[in-house]
Image 1 (cartoon, one colour):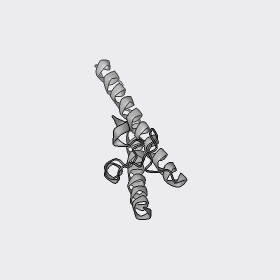
Image 2 (cartoon, helix red, strand yellow; image 1 turned 60 degrees about the horizontal axis):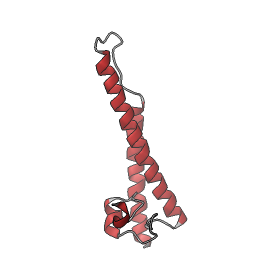
Image 3 (cartoon, helix red, strand yellow; image 1 turned 90 degrees about the vertical axis):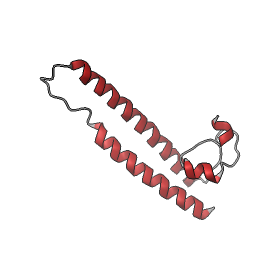
Length: 104
């Protein structure tokens, strides 16, 4: 499993870097002209940006949790039932916390 863990760590670290870059990109908020007449549109765009940032932060937390599990030696174990998560599922979703049965 050592090679698989190395692959998983690489995928997770790559995902973490992408998420961090996206957070930096969107963390500044929506830029708008103070003289812009449609304040409703500005508010809507700001709301969408906050929702996106929230989702990025949540996904980043999942990736960080998976990296911690790798360090602890518990990566690939379902947090609900304790069974091994299938290799295919981990490959598709490296930060998953649950086996396919418990995810449903």
